[in-house]
Amino acid sequence: MATYQADDGWDALGDPSRRAIVACLAERPRAVGELAQELPISRPAVSQHLKILKDAGLVTDQAAGTRRVYRLNPAGVAALRDQLETFWNRALDSYQDVAEQPTEEIP
Amino acid sequence: MATYQADDGWDALGDPSRRAIVACLAERPRAVGELAQELPISRPAVSQHLKILKDAGLVTDQAAGTRRVYRLNPAGVAALRDQLETFWNRALDSYQDVAEQPTEEIP
DNA sequence: AGTATCTGTACGTCGTAGCTTACGGTTCGT
DNA sequence: ACGAACCGTAAGCTACGACGTACAGATACT
Image 1 (spheres, rainbow over the protein chains, first blue to last red):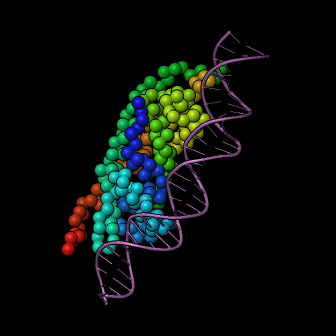
Image 2: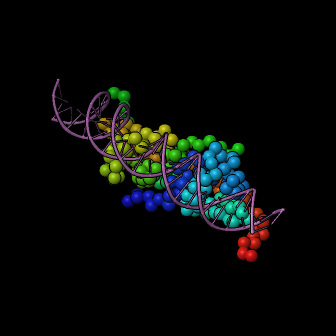
Image 3: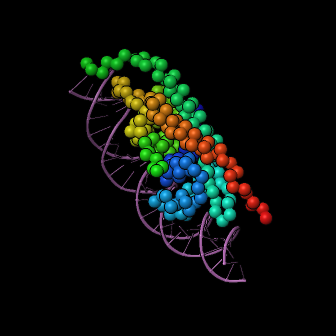
């Protein structure tokens, strides 16, 4: 009963730094150092965030020489989008009984 | 450049308890006490979470006698959905150059 | 009026998430 | 083979957020 079964993809996007990383990767795939260079946090911090995003299925990594290129995972993003879609549809049902109870707030 | 301009609607959904509240309200509008009764946290805790969700524009409240009924706000949910849509579209652009760099990972 | 019910807020506590620094491992270049 | 560049992980510290308890306000009921 509405236990939500979190993929913890939401927990991943709950942090502003991680949202910034996702926004960067949405533009173009980048390496860890490149990301750290555009963010106000250190490179190891970016590395830790990327691990969380990867576990959440939001990004994928690929070794390229000594560097490691991360890119956004459309499947993970689509999963979250579908959940919002569900919430949106159910909320519409709750809204089709607007003014079900007459509001007499002002005596 | 990818500063993300957070509505902090994401910060609101970053907490598991708040996601559970949203999931409950997606089914049907409820009062504070009803929500607290279905969640493993106290009533004041629910009240604090509802304040955050309200500030984020994800829920709306309505006085009903001595109770206060909260319901999901479809507009706020749709806003988050649109942002994911943007990420998804941009990621598709990043994906249409798959295998741009030949991977010689195994010597 | 008095009481009961429902709610919001202040406050103090505790856990934990995020960050930096330091270190070790892997790959490319000379 | 040596050094440089890039990355992941461990340890440690700090700060913030979530929670419960206690209190105050508002409304309905008798």
